[in-house]
Length: 546
Image 1 (tube, rainbow, N blue to C red):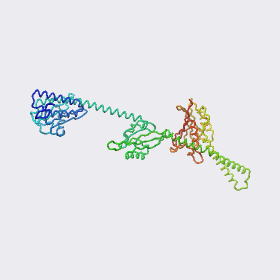
Image 2: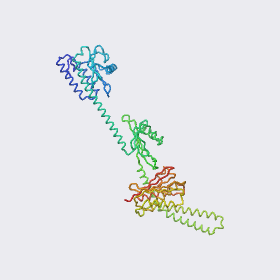
Image 3: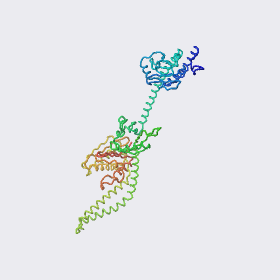
Image 4: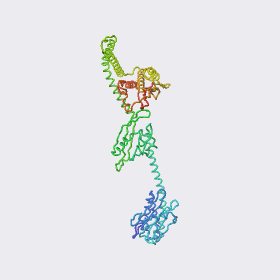
């Protein structure tokens, strides 16, 4: 800045010799240039130039105003009175001036306040801002009197204007580059965030307070229950997930927005192939850091089917062991009296046939009752025999066997049974199958039990299909029917001992439990898929011989 004058503020260059004025002007421009060197925002450039000039030429008011591409209007005003920019600049007149071709060099407006609102100043000096070869604005300085706008001051204003034009141009480009860099960084961060969400092995989506979907990750698009992201983003979540129970779904979201607490919900769905999938769904409220208000709810769905099936398998194994121990302890005790009852019934039947009761009026009733006693005793004997077989499930001698031959033999036995005459059989066996290490008789017993259940599920006829194929390191055996199917609520219980969906007296509920025990003893796995009205498929997976 220029050395201060006793009668003026620091930076005043009035009342000095020509040499001093020149040196002072150079010092002024040099200091202004240094102050602008690291000023990177056009608004800051405008403010520093206007303030420096207002003090440097001791003017009542100085206004910097420019219209820049990609930034818009940049302006700043400084005055001794401390008035705001809006109360000094006539914006409407400036915009009209800029719309027409203004003078290319600075000029003085005397007795005419062109840009500055009425005040103490008597004249205005207008110095156009040349940016990229075009006039994009001006620096307007108001003076107390006409003579104050002398040549020395106007040259200083023009020099400062040129310096300001270069600085504004550079800062505008820097601002645009910085803005582009920030936008690019934001876009990169957005893409990275989306990639992270898409890589998560859970389905995830986010809804706002209007229940509009704002985020939908890739996992949520996959699978039979998946929905494309393009069909989900921006839409109402209840319209997108219309298959879910609307009342319960809305209540879950409303509760999350209202309470702000994380909630975990267990759900199960039925896939298109009839298999049951288990999910752990978490509703996670997202709060505003300032107001603590819930703005969004994140829904995370984790497929826990493997975990749930493992728990079910463990529970079934425990029940099987308990029932096995119980059966082993009581079967023999029950069989002895049952054998006695059956033997007595048969002896009485022989005596009836021999005519020992011909004179009795109840001879006919006696014959009927003895028949019922004998048939029911033998039915009980069948149940206890099944229990005994169940309690004795042990893998016998394991040798390499052909799973395809076991299934063909089982299918042949089923076809000779006097049941299911309207059932059509289909056998699909893959060629070149590896062998399995197993007790062939027990595997056949399991396949026959599954086929018998399948026939019972098709009282009106249908197709019974046997399939054998390799799947990785295992051999798969499937028994499929086109019957009534299994209700979804019964699926977790079908391998439990004594559970049956058949009518009373038509099943003991031990067949599938025995199958489960046999396959488990062989180190295999058994699963089921079922669709109501379409049929059921049981799948056995046994380790192949390497």
